[in-house]
Image (cartoon, rainbow, N blue to C red; front, side):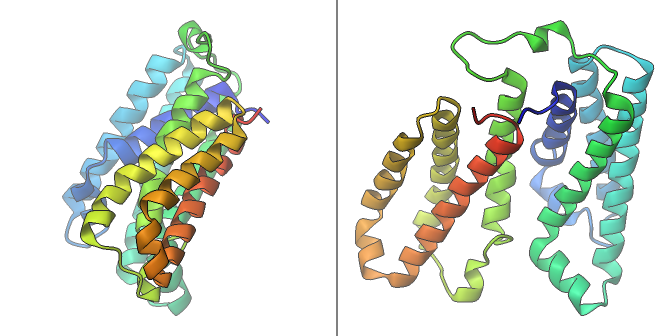
Amino acid sequence: MTIDINFAVILLGHILADFYFQTDLIALNKNQSGNLKIFIVHIVEYSICMGIILFLGIEFSKNLGIIWLASSFIHFIVDLFKRLINRYKTCHKVRFYFDNHGIIIDQAIHICTLVLIWYLWGRSINVRHLILQNIEYLPVRPIPLLVGFLCILRPVGIIIKKGELWDFSKHNIQPETSVQNAGKMIGYLERIIVLFFIIYQQYGAIAFVLTAKSVARFKEIETNKSMAEYYLIGTLLSIVSVFFIALVLGLCR
């Protein structure tokens, strides 16, 4: 399975605009009823960032302009719908799913719309020649790999931290503050190392990552059953997310 390079560039623009160029302040307040200006700032920021990535990575054409406008407009519509849901949600099921899985639902809708946009206008566009160049000693194409790295860092980290895959707070599992702060960087490094092992087909070496984490947390795990479960679930979610993203992006050979 390989990802189309044109779609990879479109996805790169989305990930950068929606996760890396969007500040925490905007992410927290853009859907609140009294913060229309912040919502508009996000839409403008998304459009500018997406446009820069698209026009730098893909040769200019009429379809490229349509893709840029369509992706920006549909992102606005989806975020507006989410804003309205957040403001007027009264149905218990709607409230439950958006409160507990809002980011996953939001990103699933965004990516599906980008797939549709690519299917309608993106299959005839051409990426710039520089992007097609392979890097020596790198077994996969650089753009999908870059998308993979960006996905496994901030997006996956936010989803795990917010408990959208498994809500630790409901099970009274609260790690110490020092462990919690260090855990973010540990998670980043863990997923980066695992992705490198995947693209170089060193699957057995992934066990060393798990062993290193287990040794570092051994005393805490041994004396605290809840912490052991917290550690195991969090680690497995992190590892599985890397494998899933690598498979979708065609980084597994």
